[in-house]
Image 1 (cartoon, rainbow, N blue to C red):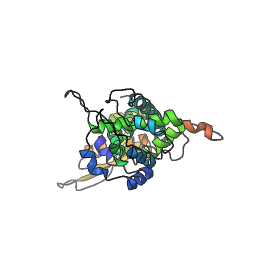
Image 2 (image 1 turned 180 degrees about the horizontal axis):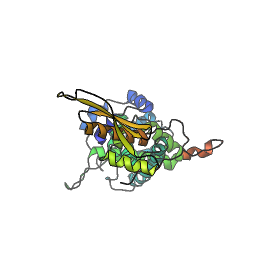
Image 3 (image 1 turned 90 degrees about the vertical axis):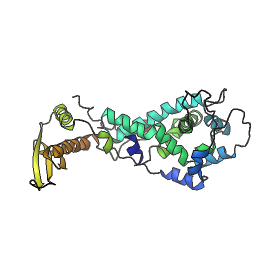
Image 4 (image 1 turned 45 degrees about the vertical axis):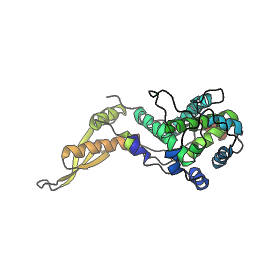
Amino acid sequence: MLRSLTKTYSLSAQAAAAIKTAPRFASAFFHTQPLYEDNTTEDIAPIHALGARLGLQSLDSKILKQALTHKSVAGEENNASLEFIGKRVTGLFATEYIHCKYPTLHPGALNSALRAFIGNKSFTKIATEVGLQHTITWKAPEDDSVKLGQATVMADCMNALVGAIYQEQGQEAAKKFIHSFVLSRDFDVKPIIKVQEPKRHLTALLKQLNKEPAESRLLSETGRASSSPVFIVGVFSGKEKVGEGFGSSLKMAEFRACQDALTSYYGQEQKDFTLPSDAENVDKYTATPLGNTQAII
């Protein structure tokens, strides 16, 4: 599922701007070799260039280099601690944002949305776009049973960058970075709302919302006696039509109508909201109303 979700991404404005000044890293991603512990080069120009592309010129070059030194490299100057912090900080701000933007999103879909935004695949993609692969230092495992590839290393280093920003410049700087490079990306929430038994789920949801039970009604049809019939079914709760679907059979049309009803409810998007972390920055903070949790079936 996440493979289809990541296809909906587009570059954020800042990431797109970063790419214009980045070297040709699309092919380099597949050919870059790991840098080993005995690499003593002092050339940190690529690290400074990365900092400039990411707007991190004010971040100390030493901490920036540490964030880009993977924990697979033995020693005290790797990014293990920064990565740990970065993952928690990223998770906090991403959860806050998605939960406020889609207040009725059920927990299963919320977890899928989080993985699509801040999972390793997404972070590797972002890291590649900004040229992170030219600056990382890591050591390939000597044990063949240990699976560690460059994609995982890049995702870890991306999290460590967030941790470095948070530690050195505070939560507002980290939050700005996350919103600019991670949460600004396009995302279609509809595919992750799908459930296996939409009719049963919709029945439980309407009961939880104290609404009338779902009733399926045939709205129109064509070619019933042909080899290619099309039926359009609407699902109603009382007089309110909550979903609509089509199909080559009544059962398929009803299935899609129930799924459409669930997508409409769980996928409600708030256009104007204030994040809880911004409460102190407004005159009067009003919390975004959160919807009921997922119906239990």
